[in-house]
Length: 473
Image 1 (cartoon, helix red, strand yellow):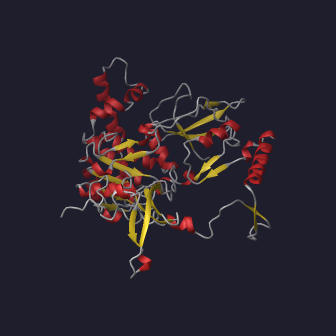
Image 2 (cartoon, helix red, strand yellow):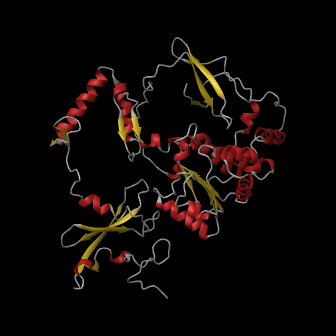
Image 3 (spheres, one colour):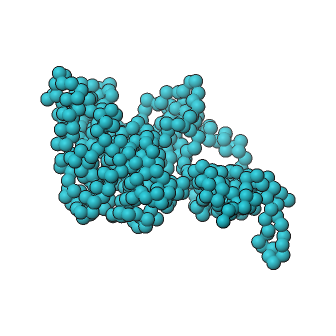
């Protein structure tokens, strides 16, 4: 049956979402008032596109504004939005509660009694700004910058606040990210220099999601839509999670490993790809820094040709990861050997159409959790599923953020930490994450300690340019 163009709106996905008014009638849309039933009372609306910000997905909404009262009557999805495509979670329409909530705070309040008494008085914005500015200025003048901290739930201003704090010489910018996605971002940053992956689930052949990924139900409805699109097109869905999440209920393979052991499983899959030559050799040869790695090994001479050298790297790669067997992963994770092997074989069939994601939970609630995201993206890097259809893109590639002509330098200080004479770090140049040791001289300059050791045997000649991650003492 063909959809009626006067009542049905096809939307960007061309799937005829009949519940949406056609765009040509958004300026004057008529509906019957459901509360007037059984009387037929018409209400006339202007439909104004807007954005939901109950999470950072920023799905599209349409605000239904009553033409008689100029009040927002309701919110529904915007079928023109390319991300959410008119399909919103319950938080989108519930935005109306935030607008009409009688307890919504509409002006600044100042505590009038003791903390906890619940006594407040209304004050003006000038008083608030003058009070905060005077306290911040006093701390800066008295060189107490470490006592100034700006905390925000979810920053959405593309670095403006950071520039202000840097101009003040303050290193106190904190946000929700510190206890959420920062661990996973570290793992991605070490691989591709960008910390936010953008998986193309809709066109993937195999989708691997770990723990609290963006699609597991707590937010990011647009990602969840693409996971279902991918499955509808035949993609296999693999989920590692200790919970039976919304995503796990749709998985072809769902396993619940011991928290923190996910990296062991991922390395065993990587080892399977390496030992059986199932990785994308041309991608690895072109994009991995294997030449730099070989330069650091004494047994590899400069006289070798590039072809011979890459073969040498492949030989070393097989040896380096040979310990990460399925049996090793099973012992670490509590997952059956045969299950891990079956998952590895499915991953190997993906080619460049391998999409993956991990965002928080295991990467934020477990010591060295960042290694999980790092080991996960290694599978993409082995398969060549990076910036490919059905793979994982660095999402900042096409994001334009205008920057000012003059940007203040970042503060030289980093909090107020009294470092010991020597302190441990982790080398992050490869997945072994060797423990190393640095020390500070009398001028507080960082020097390499004689105790510096790595599995590859490299003794660097300079600290500058090396990649390290601070460890707790």
